[in-house]
Image 1: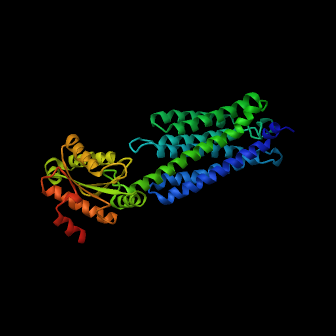
Image 2 (image 1 turned 45 degrees about the vertical axis):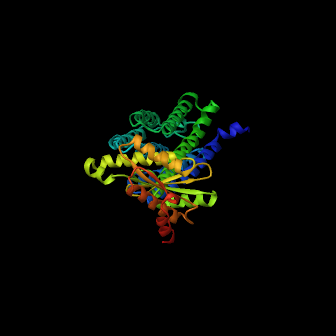
Amino acid sequence: MTILTWLTGPNGQLISSACVIIILILMLFMSTRLYTSYRNKRIYRYLTLTIPLFMVQNTILAMLAYPGQKLPPWLHIVSMILQIVSFIIINFVYMKLYTHRGAQIKVMPFVLLIVLTFVIAAVQSMFMDPSEDALLPGGQYRLLGLDFYSLIVTFMILLGTKGAEMNGKFSASLITYFILDLSRIADGYVFHGSVDWLVLLSYFLPIVYFMQLFLLLFEWVIERLMMTYQSSITDGLTGLYNRRHFTSKAEQILRRQKGLAVIFCDIDNFKKLNDTQGHHKADGVLKQVAEIMKEESAGIGAAGRYGGEELLACISTDRVKPDRVAESIRSRVEKETIVTVSVGVSTSKDGKDVVQLIKLADEAMYHSKTTGKNKVTLFNAMPSSKKKALSTS
């Protein structure tokens, strides 16, 4: 017996089902975690309940591949029902997961497809030929209605992905499943198991399909984890680091580099802007200034939001002069926005730790604010009397 003959026999189906079940177990673990961790319980519940249906169906397929067991014919219909219904539900779930909130994925078409599955299965059972002459290669019965209905369902869902603007990887998985259905029908009704590569396709394309689903779900989990992580370290409005994470980034630079500078910016007359032009306009300006801070500190440090209209940048002083970076920020804000900023700068020569440097930069900014606004003040250039009072406080 050659390897090809061995793979195209019952053992091929057994290997296929075993591989699919292993993939499904991994998917079930992820879906269970999603169900317990996120608010959208209904969708994750559908996913968690559908995966075991696929597992049961693949177990039945492995059993049916060995004709000597003389299993009841109705088990073949149950297998097809599980396959089609599970396929419909899991595609509904993926379409809900991967479409934006504004997209309308209606439940009723999927419900009708499921109901029609049972109707066709009932009619199929009435006209089913229980004799061995009706067996397809691989030990399954010819279920003409359900076989072709499965192909139609796949094609309809594939067409539906265009209107829903789905992920291209999801459409690729549907194409894989469509080819799988075609290969099963061609093998069972045209070639009758005589073409080895068609038999292999019908056995091993399910592995490819479920691997695609697994990767899509894994990608979804990673995206959710990244979003959760980002929301824990960044400010929701500006996208800059929040105060806690900014301090952590500044401490990293202070430990790794020879010098650190903290640039403290406060938007001039921001309250007046809020009162006269509204929160929406003020928020837009705040985002503009934050973007300038982010761009100017990119590659040499990090930017954060201290609170309100107060923004921070920490930069390594190994390659750049902090006063030039601060002046660039001030100048760009004046030219590119409708506001100005008062800026204060401190360096690691002025203080011993990040918290103190932020405090000194804040005081330098306050000096800019009280002596004309729209200017940069270096802490070490402030009057000696003020520096001494701050350094000892």
